Structure formats: structure tokens, C-alpha cells
Image 1 (cartoon, rainbow, N blue to C red):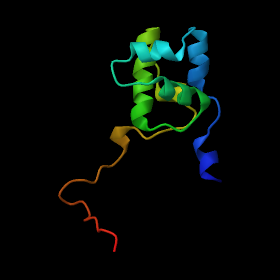
Image 2 (spheres, rainbow, N blue to C red):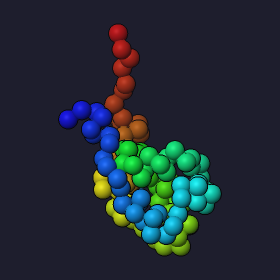
Image 3 (cartoon, one colour):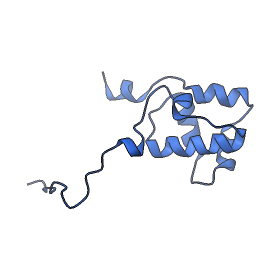
Length: 101
């Protein structure tokens, strides 16, 4: 599997949800309280892989625009780990990073 194939995941459910509510990318951008661009919305609908942070921004903007609560699984066919599921290892016991020679 190439990197291109891994990052292009096909049209996502968020596109259908936006269509059902007659929403355009600008509607999500305008309803977002966070930094959200038209390009982020477009990439989400087309199926480009997005970071969990961008997915959360889209989730919040869609909820505000539609007045409905959605889960990430409702918007995307691929699962990004939720922050509480990701083990952070940046405390005092974190391994020391070594610089390249």
C-alpha cells in the first residue's frame, strides 16, 4: 500500500451529512469557533486523512451548524485515536530523545 493510497480514503460520511442538511464548506467554517479552513472541510469530504485535532474541529462545527450531536464515527470511516486513548509519554519517565549523528 502506498502512502497516497493510505491517505486517500474515499468520500466520507460527513459529505452525506452536509448534503442532507444543505450545508456548504463555508457554513462549517462560519460556524466554527476554532481555526477551520475551507480546505480542511473539503479534504474531509473527499476522504483525505485528517489529524484528530482537525477531525474534532469539524465535529464541533458540524454540531453547531446542524444543532445535532455527532460522534467521529458518524463522520469518518477511519478511526483516529481519541486523546484519552493515546498514552502520552512526556513525563519524567519519558525516554530520552537522541539526536541524529
